[in-house]
Amino acid sequence: MLPPTSLLTLTTKIFLHVRPRVHEYLKQWIERAARIPSPELQKQALASIRSKTFHCEGGSIYGLLAGDQYPEAIRFIVAYQTISDYLDNLCDRSTSLNPDDFRILHASMRHALTPGSIPSDYYLYRDEQDDGGYLTALVRTCQDVLARLPAYHLIAPYLHELADYYCDLQVYKHVSKEKRIPLLKAWFDMKREGLPAMEWYEFAACSGSTVGIFCLVAQAFHQDCTDLLVQKIKKAYFPWVQGLHILLDYLIDQDEDGLGGDLNFCSHYQDHQEMVSRITHFYTQANLSIASLPYANFHRMINQGLLGIYFADQKVSRQKEVRKAVREMIFLGGGVGLFFYLICSLYRRMPASKAA
Image 1 (spheres, rainbow, N blue to C red):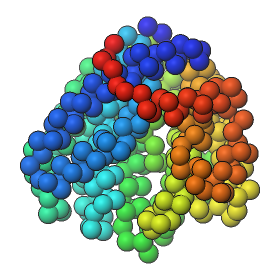
Image 2 (image 1 turned 90 degrees about the vertical axis):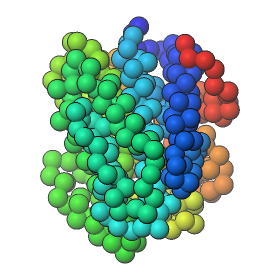
Image 3 (image 1 turned 135 degrees about the vertical axis):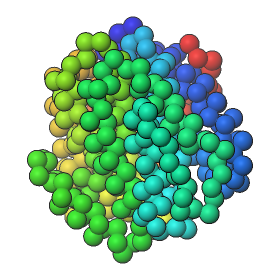
Image 4 (image 1 turned 30 degrees about the vertical axis):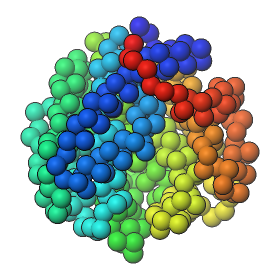
């Protein structure tokens, strides 16, 4: 099975193959989470799946790059994204501001990318300790898939690099409010050499996505995967595609984050015009960066789809400045972006069916 390169085939495979498979795997993780002994850990595990299912649905589209092996690629993506969403809930809902706590929790994400790595005591700095092996089971599922990849040795350094960016971000953004921005700025200063021109909050956004990892893993299912191709994928997805992904996420979350006192990277632009200009720039560069990849139209459709999916979110209608930004950028994605914009609400309301 070849990756889809037209809107019709992409949409068909999302509904008939990707979405049912995602829900099959999530059902298994929901059943496992429901058996977590700690009431608080159980609550956050179940809540993270319930409220963030669309993360797994969207990320799993990259599983189609694995061809006939897409079920295994999706198995990895669902497990890895579930770790990310679960830890995000634990950190966001935590009374702890201990960076050691956040770092050891997120060590699970690097372990998940390293077959043979032994899971740690991820809850070492927490009052809640007993998850019944839930997080370790997620880690080992990821390891199990990666251990059988023909090209794992090629993608491993880039998986670890992207995971380290992600984990560092999660530590710095969850510490006490007065420390967050100084830490993020200092981190950016250490990493900015070799990066395109950008600000610290844009670098943070680029670090906060998992889609580069998903793309690399799906590609590594192929025997003909090369080191050159892996380098091209990493360079395309970090910073541009990942930056676009997270900037759009923060664009629509501005009011919500403001009310919750959470850090929002889009709020650091000087004004509305600069924000729209920079998001547009990330979109343009994301499309340029994937142009030399195999099945470039698949990657391009996902970039276009990101615009449609985020712009169709219900949060947009409640924010005047965000509505204005959407009106200014809605046509960037062309017909594909508009298509996803129109079907997004329907897509999220569809009941899951049995996996194909």
